[in-house]
Image (cartoon, rainbow, N blue to C red; front, top):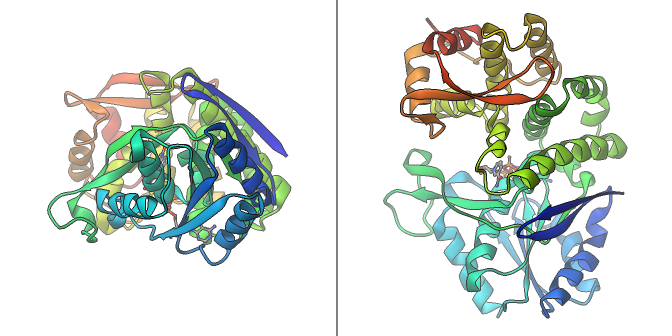
Length: 379
Ligand SMILES: NC(=O)c1ccc[n+]([C@@H]2O[C@H](COP(=O)([O-])OP(=O)(O)OC[C@H]3O[C@@H](n4cnc5c(N)ncnc54)[C@H](O)[C@@H]3O)[C@@H](O)[C@H]2O)c1
């Protein structure tokens, strides 16, 4: 079992990573509840896994002596809204959750963000336990205390709205969990494409730490895709430690935490071109290649480092180039809409030769254009 201790101004908590850890969820949650004098838990679970992993989680909570109510949640960006949060508040009220009751958020990043925001705001905040069930949520979304929803422009509360009318992650709160329980076995049911999206974030973390670790992903890739418990727990543990270390040094994203956006300014621009049909992790994988391209142009890394990254990304079946050419000017324009591009000047996170990355202000447009072309943008 891997136990990672997190110490923050908002409090300390433990991340448990172990095959079969779902069986210990009840005991962990009971400790959290007892701390606040409560005995109730609401399990907010992704409806796609409610009848499988959700049942094991609910049994574990009940066996520990907690009074449990299960609330399935549909995980889609169009329902990651205040309307869904309101429905959760109503369910929490109907279940008579109190200040000491625990909300257990079980699912991918969508459930973690929505249920986490509900926990942060119901009765001015109740204890939260995160049980991430996608690789992306295990290594990224569940760590660091960011919760939140998209703002739907127009429409009625609770109604699904088209993605074009959503302002992503505009509403949110920092709300640290009291515990995170990661069971790599639940990844056996995750679609392979979702699994690879999580791998893109692992690659990002290892670029931010020690490039030598990237070789491990390349070497273990086949074992990982076969869901070897020990290899998965190793990968997740390494990645969680890297993100957790950064979050502990910069809890509220006032400085260093921005490094976690490596590749993301490019990725967000690609994601705004909906015709590309890229998932976030896929856009991040291409974005990492673009950021590496910029770093190579500026002499921050060598061409061989760029090439190594490209080969690794392709070897794990993630894209390293745009799936079809997009006009360069559209991508440059989309980039200026990103909140990390201050005053029209690009502020990028760029890797360094010795491993790690820096926030680089005022990157010249020519350098960015060349990076877009290198990943397949149309001139
Ligand atoms: N809070 C943060 O710091 C943070 C960081 C990164 C991303 N996010 C957010 O996370 C979201 C993306 O998260 P995600 O990639 O986990 O997506 P997701 O929550 O949409 O899950 C992806 C898909 O996998 C399904 N699923 C989940 N677990 C499963 C399992 N074990 N087996 C089978 N299917 C399963 C879901 O139903 C969904 O269809 C975005 O909304 C993003 O904004 C938040």
